[in-house]
Length: 118
Image (cartoon, rainbow, N blue to C red; front, side, top):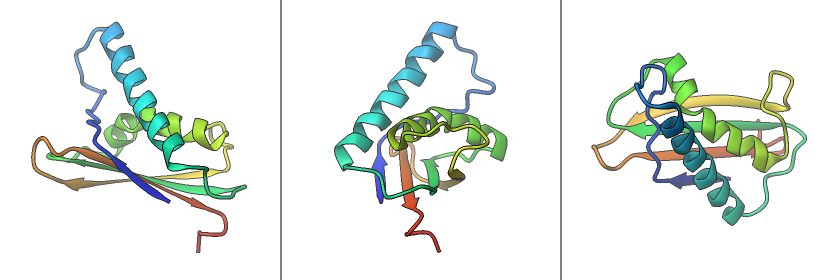
């Protein structure tokens, strides 16, 4: 299954923001993704999944900043799947990015269950 939602994922590595502002931003990202996934239905059948998170934004990030920017999305997807997102989790996490014009930022989340993965 694939979902897209308008969501800005800034790089948090060099952001100079107050801890409370960061907490509000992360909570908002988690809630937006969580509600969007819940409204899209049940997750694909497991017990293993491949999740691809694509950040569509005007500027590209390097790979470590990309993973950090997608952390709240990853947490929300793991909660929706009912698993932990740690290293022993039954989920393979993949990240990508595409370019778009400013103001058209989107996050694309693709979740494939064990039967969908080739």
